[in-house]
Image 1 (cartoon, rainbow, N blue to C red):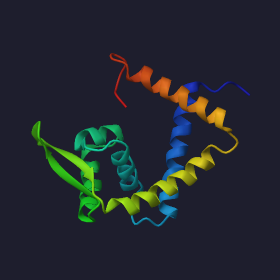
Image 2: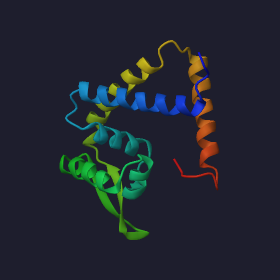
Image 3: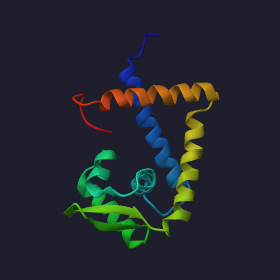
Length: 148
């Protein structure tokens, strides 16, 4: 077997992981699209992001983000507020009503994550996390491309 280039492995693993997460969200019957579920997770990890920054972090088009946020806001799971430093921008926050749904989203994500990490003991998981954090930091360094 030939050595598969690291970049191919990273991209393929990320693609498969995202597909498995999307499947887990659909299986959980959350009443959300996979994109909406990912939006809630991103907002939970990074509270109070600007709408545009959130779209960038999720690597989706701003108009796609607007659709997700419109639906989540209509259901009472998020609120958009004017950014005090730029009135044209909106800050997005989770509402208290999102908490029970977010627990179900995180449970579905946990199931998919455990499937992906099957066969890796805790030291291997820690090493993987450390390596990915280092790669991310290297690629986010000034002058090295896009931010994460």
